[in-house]
Length: 203
Length: 203
DNA sequence: TAATGTGAAAGGCTTCACAGCC
DNA sequence: GGCTGTGAAGCCTTTCACATTA
Image (cartoon, rainbow over the protein chains, first blue to last red):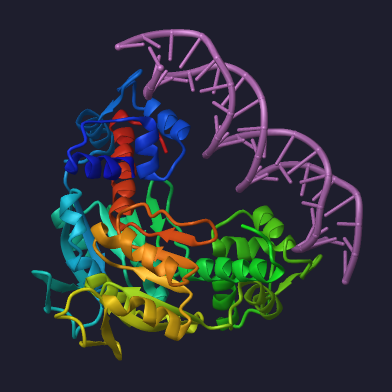
């Protein structure tokens, strides 16, 4: 998030930023930002702040921005389609190496300049492109199975959009994105808020 | 997450589940699950576990499942398209009331059975359908502006897919889903993992 | 006997507050 | 004067461990 915020500041031509300014842009407390950055080293100047371009480079290096990373998307339904066409990946060092789908009707179809490959070729695809991250955009029922196969093929990270909790061996990273749950959380807060309004509590 | 896990168990015909079993399905520690559930009340039976159907009902009631919630999607690009067609919403009590886009070329187009409305009608749409949650699938540059308008129109929750931190008044909920950041987190861990492998640390 | 509900302990994250430095 | 870097304090979350109950 700091990296993204700094990119924005750099584009606006800002040369220097204080912990307060960057914290505001990142949506955190200034002290927290300083503590986070202190884990990377002392890249600020007391009395002045942080040099935007320098800090961007340091954080980028720590994150490994630059070393391109191959991704495979499994499941080319609505979401998989959108992800394949999503423009934000190349800019951040990610390349969609292949699309895979179980449906024979979709196999061979071209999406975002890539041919959709059959699910049976999943392992071959991962090995051929040295894919490090698998994106699961399949129905919930097959997600764990796809995940197991991805991990067995050598993937070290999984981004899961299916609404199930995945089990993976230690050493493999999992990030869960569940749209239904996110909406439910918002709806819950919205409901609580209304309850407060009715009772008449001041905000 | 517990609600989702219980739904799965119910579909499989499981009648009773222990904190250990449900915790496994939800990806948490059994003690944590028991503590969480204790905030709702004592719905378990010592020596036995939890009645799946009962617990599902209690949690559903606490979450407000059943009272349908109207959602507007702003930005009908790849992601907005996918979200509009996403099948998971109706099943969880959400109804996409309208699609809105700033591009005049898209206006009027029919997506997922809904006509795309111009951005100028955003406020009217929110009021007409009593929309409680806004989904932002626009470019980053206009996200804060769209958010401000949604909030002013009376929305109490925002699900943001644009890669910017949104500022909202207290009382309004925000959930951020940033695909680029998620991938970067996975790539970072993947890189650290490789470093460990090179050094030869046992897992 | 088996599993819940829950005080108490442990651990981790966030914030404060200020010394140190430009 | 102003802002960073950081020890210490505070707060919150998670886990343990066991009394309690069907």
